[in-house]
Amino acid sequence: MKTILFFISLFLNVQMFAQKSKTILFIGAHPDDETAISEVLIKYARTGNKVFVIIATNGKDGTRVTKIPAGDSLGNLRKKESACGCAKMGLRPPIFFEIQRLDTKIGTGNYFKEHQRFLDSLKIRIPSINPDVIITAGPDGDTHHSEHIVVSGAVTELLLAEGWVKKYPLYHFAWKKGTISVDPGSYMDEQYVNVKITFTVEDKNKAIDAMSCYVTQYTAQELKEEAERKLKDTENTINFRKFITAKGCKKEF
Image 1 (tube, rainbow, N blue to C red):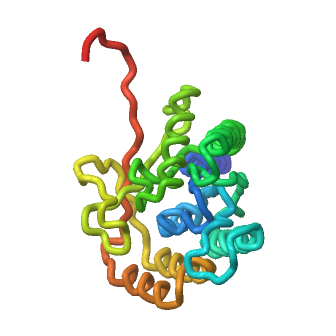
Image 2: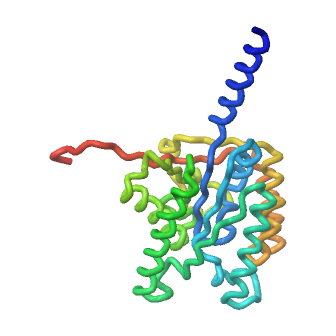
Image 3: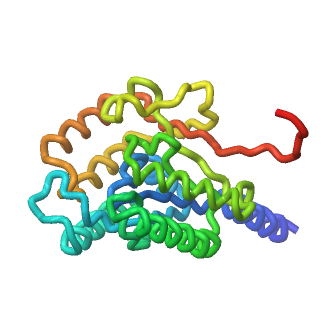
């Protein structure tokens, strides 16, 4: 009898553990966008969850602090940087859609084609990953970057179009007003925050270590300042807003 009870208890504990494990999917526009909420992604990977990262472009035009000219060589290097960062964070290797751009710098017609290609790629890949949670930037695009905003809108658009809002819950990360190192105009009133994810100092230190992978996008001084900012922040919390829609139809507003 004791043996039977032991195995029943073991089975229930295994079931409980299995139920707690989640599949998290982060969707960004460029290699390095995953660093925006790296501590949260690190936490979920550390606690036994599968964490996937989808990157729309290869970032070949991101010449911010590098002398490498825009083009495939830079794009390939940035993909390696993202792979390095994800490995340090304990995430799955990043998935690149190789979208050319998600703005009209490539011409309006080409933008429409690339936007549709992005939607088509998401439509295939999201069900294959089957995430319990999707995370992307909110309407502000994290820093008001146009391609970030397009990615956020495209993910939301697809979930609404396919009736996937409940099936694949979407969370936008959001900053409170006055957050240092973020575009000062990119914030959300805290009354709309409905999820607060805390993380450990160890998660933070791992995030700082991962930042060293992205050498084409940050100077040594910027990396030092970002590390100092993270270490000074004792809240160790990132805010999110779950995307929620109401069903039912009224005849008037």
